[in-house]
Picture 1 (spheres, rainbow, N blue to C red):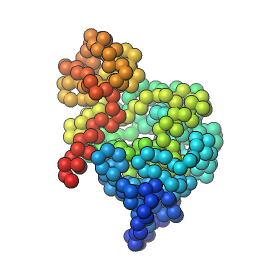
Picture 2: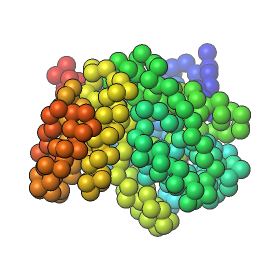
Picture 3: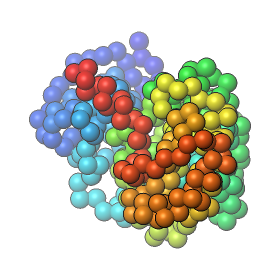
Picture 4: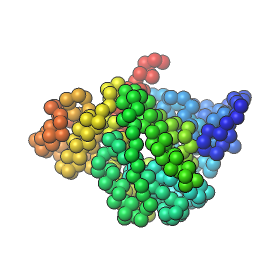
Length: 358
């Protein structure tokens, strides 16, 4: 029995797959599942927006399987994120075509470089009537990020709406297992989706090609509920987003990544409003001390601080101020991670456990 999975493509029962031999996958009018140097064409998966097929990863010790959207993406290399000889101008033109074709969008706007870029492009192409930026506000969002979303909306003239999400009311989210992100994005889509329906719009997220290499089950939740990822469809890497943002004069071009506050809590440790507030206060204080890219990893009464390796000496030199700031935020012990900042650091346990299982 066929069904529409929410992105405009009707999929039906599993049919025969065929194997391709090329390392870089040529996309046809169906979906390529990429595993190492082997690719399969599978007719049952959404051909619009890259749905996870397995729970494996593309980078690191495992090469996982991803389904890629066929629209406008040719010779896609799933490991490096390269799209043949495409230059940035070509990708921007492709992105503009995709957004114009969508016609009416609601952008999930976190204020980060990716979603800000998408919101700015959509606003320029579609105007305030057809481009609506929406920010999910909850204890998971850093207070500084909510403030910056408001400022960006004012600076750029966006039609912007903050909406309250209640992922903390979901027991599966609070449990903080490896699929926590799924439940967070499910809540986002359950709140933003009806708003988009009222406007006859499509929900778009600022997911880029590089994001596909990390463990981010929230992507699956968004896709299942009808969201699309235009940056992926156009082949944008994180570096592409930053270069294009700089060319457009967007101040977010070099903004440090700022993931959901719950990503600071190790899997298996229940998430609470108190913990998220403590992390938020500590990171805000460290920003105030001049550290732009920082993570405060939560381990009970201990805060493990990550800053960029280039400023480790600065952190050590300012140890007294850092200790005071983080203790004021509610921690008893303060440690500095000498490996420095690593995005998605806590996802390492997933790769490690998967590798040991094999």
